[in-house]
Length: 94
Image 1 (cartoon, rainbow, N blue to C red):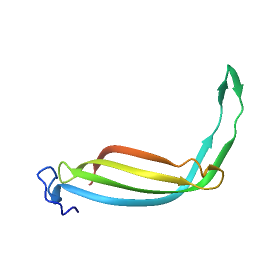
Image 2: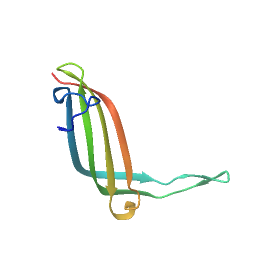
Image 3: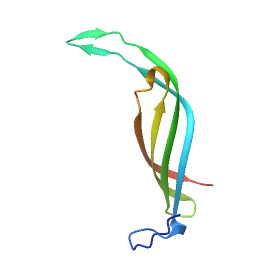
Image 4: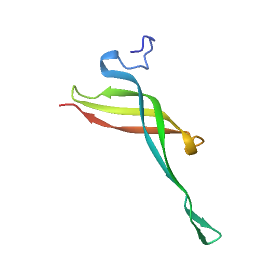
């Protein structure tokens, strides 16, 4: 929770800040067209890690609007395919 006093920040009981991390796999396919000719590409699946952060803004005790972002770090043949992902959504807790 943020301890920075500001009239622009929501009170702590309306907001849940978090950090996230995870591991998994990423798959990339390289196919397409060059000058009108179909080009067969390569496909690779590699292990990847993800670190991120987000915020949940509580609309009601059960409903929250969520915003998050993360940095994905693939390994192996896809190690130069680092990217940032962003997300936004609704969460209902029951």
